[in-house]
Image 1 (cartoon, rainbow, N blue to C red):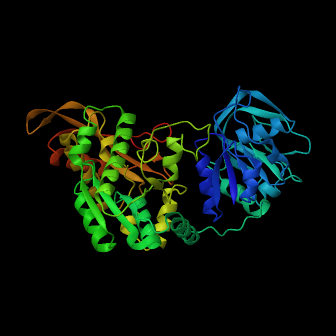
Image 2: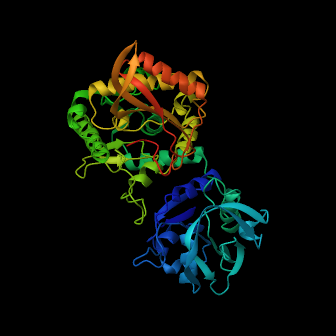
Length: 512
């Protein structure tokens, strides 16, 4: 395994994703993790992530200095490299020129870390401070025009540093660099596969749950569907799935889910119609964080009440929490102390403190594409596996402002048209998410020679690999025109459609 010590970079999980795509397992740990804990789990290598801090700041994050003499290979990335240089006796200064974005990196030593790579790489830089003197025993491995020491290494101690992000797609050959570290330097074996993940997960679930019964929070999306299939395989009849219709689902979603899980999966399913209850819970609420937390808390309360109604005891609740949920919510025990909260996901940051269940989250170390691979290994139909992500709070966070039954109905109708057009045009699988957002404004229009004053919807379509970053999907104009025409003609309460062209970052995929 590889241990990634997280210093708060929003890209830390991308490092993990790159490593696991090479079939090597890794875990993201707080930067404060001790050497004894690392040795206890027999990690073969340590990566120090980047982060938003400067090594010159008071109380800037540090790691256990004992790791430097542990004989475990180390790779420092950006802040991680600066920390290595500073703590091992080198010199770091505040740069007079910052480097953000694309840069050309020139390799001075193409052995070990840069084995098999060309002498010039296109990389993604993001730093202000820079190393100007290397620690004793280190040599320069590469440079850029503005950064004379953009990579350094001590071959004998197997400690390396790079002043750029190899984990992002903007760095060409970045994955080859990571593979050189984990496979050639750390000598890891490429044995972590969907099948091995399933086997270990089944053992973990069976060991933790034993003969107890488990409620599974089911939404019908790929995450909760994969969790349900995994639990069914692990504990069989001790699994009961609960689908809570909170009123914020896609059009006709409730009926589709009931039919799917009772007929195809043959899983015990309890359908709970809680629509009015959820509408009452967030009545008048317009703040996005308050919406998410109130919806998350109400989910748990409904599950608790449903468990009390059943004859058997259900001490466990299973959820489809993923890695991006955890990193964006921060504050979770698996997230670096240096991380920053982006938004609270209903099943992470939204959980009430007095929850009565023990939570099971078999997928909380996986990215979406990894979940899909696991789902295929579990023989879940491709139609479900490649379904576009849908947020746990549902359309409530795609309605900007107050959520009412009437506004949900309008958005359901518009969103169904977006999905229908995208599918008919053969674009569904190539787009990460495409959906409609109901804005808190109305605009003047002319329909049937009459003045209208109706709702405005925004269309959001992005491409992504893991939801950590996303680019605008460049939909053909005729597709956008068809979506707009159909929505305005078929949804009487809408007279204007706009297209969101923001990437992530700086925007998030969802509007709230």
